[in-house]
Figure (cartoon, protein in one colour):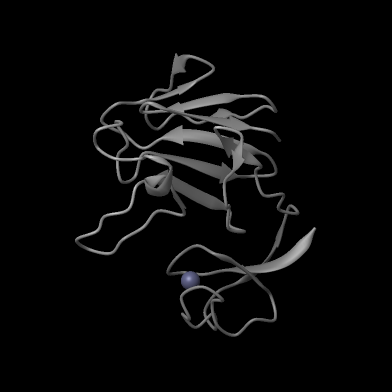
Length: 143
Ligand SMILES: [Zn+2]
């Protein structure tokens, strides 16, 4: 177990002694110190290339929006993620609660876990070797 503070702005998991969010700089003075299950970031690959995954309890996967400058936690744009390949800006998210779960964010083209379509808002657990189809892209969760 680890003592942490969640950023009230971006949900990043910060160390309990931090005064400001390491990512967005929001003051953590109002954030409660909590005991969280040790976070183990998910290992994900796309076409055998490892994806960069920030240390967070919630990871939104999608594509960035050039006009507003917004980017998801895991940005598939450099990997061919676009509206043409069926990727929504906020497509699917991974949530940590001691293990990783996956939840479709009501994406236009859906998310498939091991070839079964996820029901938006109904998270399912990820198991090592799970194949996550996001639009036309395939990600593999390695645990
Ligand atoms: Zn923050």
